[in-house]
Image 1 (cartoon, rainbow, N blue to C red):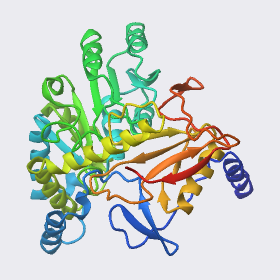
Image 2: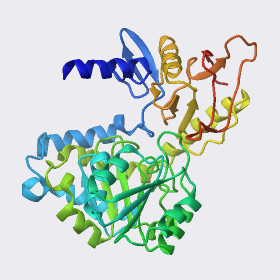
Image 3: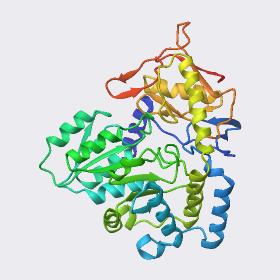
Image 4: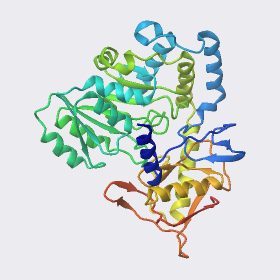
Length: 406
């Protein structure tokens, strides 16, 4: 058995798909130390820098003194504190829903909501590029699972139309796709939900705090009333840890009674909920946090477009398609040598993420020197192998060279 595992790991390594941990020290938001060298981090999701905000830290300190470290039990036993209830009430108001329910993480939320709402007689239809937690939740439910090509809503319509034999139909999508940074067409999804009498679940994890006048996310305005369940996280823009679902009272009661990742898990520690409450207040009180973030996004977009990349950034996530898994790893390592951390992601690409607190640094830009060519930049738009929409393309063998942003 161990020999077989060793061979499988060697195969992953040969394909450039082997993952390994990288231990950082002296973490300072957008900077950290690694093996005695300072790195600038272009890969986190603490979009607004709230994980290190003085008010959030102070709220955590006070809660730590009052409640201790852990919750001590599952929510349905004795693990529900006044902070759990308070945060859920605030999240429901923030997202414009009757109720909200806090889970241990965003991953657990997606696992819990889909496995609670669907069963063997039901159908789940989702975008092919949905987050892994959504796919895993759908598989765990035992429902029939169908994918439609990324943002191909005519194909989604066809799938729903040709599958009338099922009980419940559940339509699922990210609002902001975590690897590609593009946005779902919520208007189209709402139309499909109404046409086929489906439940609509939207994961707004990368939208909350980043989009909307008050940071409510992509699922805002009139469209939020048509979304049956909004999944969110406390781990990205809020800078803490945890997940939640906001929905109608009957749907939330269903989760409390049927969601195994809620029922059988120890409750999130009150200290994290106190920090999340303070972050939620800051998101609504201080629009300058989002303004700084989007200034950084626009600055990087101007730089990349000026160098030949054809892209239209709709979020703080910039996907760069490399074209080969091993080459993506090599590009990532070349950047690491120069003090820039952008880990390679599967499917032959790197992804870098802008945050509000990103300071100007001579290492903050990326450019490509194609191998055997004097042309400094090359780009490719559309789909690679019919699978991945991308915004930038670098041929295998090209060299990554850091360059200064204007």
